[in-house]
Image (cartoon, rainbow, N blue to C red):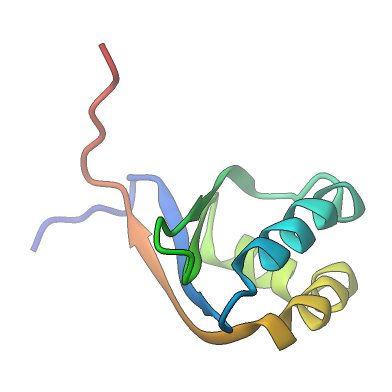
Length: 105
């Protein structure tokens, strides 16, 4: 198996929101950004809304799994997560390595 450890690391969360709550979840997520401030180890972040309104995908690039875990342990993250948790039906988190990226022409 190839060693991909030099490739960018992402934590990707597939979140299913409770019925009718996707836009409220997005609002809370975006409102939390200034309160969270700069995040050590974060390299990039993207938020996607499902076209059918059932949920979101959070894709966050990190320098390492430990940087992500440190963020998860932070009081700021725990506070914001508690606000959003009632809106979430299910979440599937996992770490992925970027293997290929095609730039737009």
